[in-house]
Length: 216
Ligand code: PRT
Ligand code: MG
Image 1 (tube, rainbow, N blue to C red):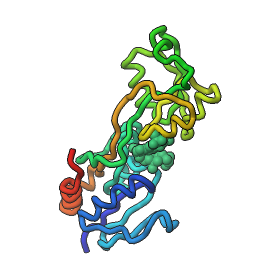
Image 2 (cartoon, rainbow, N blue to C red):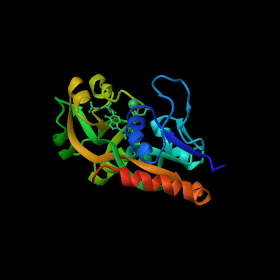
Image 3 (cartoon, protein in one colour):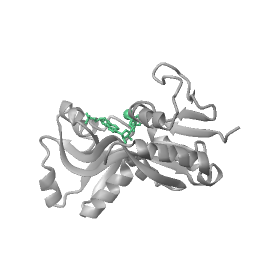
């Protein structure tokens, strides 16, 4: 029997956009996570299984060996810290950016110029802390787990740091993007111990993914 391989994915865009890469590696997921309630999905390769976890939990599963490899957004990887992870490939999927956004009537440039202390709500506290520190802007970070857009509308914060792709969510909530922080895409991450113990099968998957990537 070949060494069992566990791949951690999150439901939604990462799962959908990883499927073609899995197909290139000869791996077909046999159940649709939108229809099934199962958290462990079998694949066409008996030794390979997919586990479904929260997007922000993928790095933790792979770090501690709950999964041998996984697909995680650069945002999740930075917030996690990346300990114990080998990061062989930028998969160039689930692309977006992290940006600062404010209410349309808030003068962000002036607040920054005047050295005002900003209240910033975000799920991405590591990214936000590093970004504002590098600009020399003093911030009070308010950690949220979702619906960041509400924070400036309710007076909880002056600004948010959040993921933006089309910009439609900001627009629908009368917020404007005032400063991009970084481009985001999802990366393949591999448990460092598994990479040694299951080197051959993991290398085959990494190489198949690499050859199936969209052009840079
Ligand atoms: O929902 P959960 O708390 O489990 O985690 P999650 O929200 O991080 O998971 P998920 O599946 O929504 O996102 C997984 C990964 O996809 C993220 O970690 C990013 O790396 C990547 N990604 C790419 C995005 C987006 N694009 C994106 N647009 N993740 C989230 N969004 C959200 C964004 O937070 C905002 O609410 O979509 C909204 C903005 O989209 P636009 O198109 O309106 O600008
Ligand atoms: Mg989400």
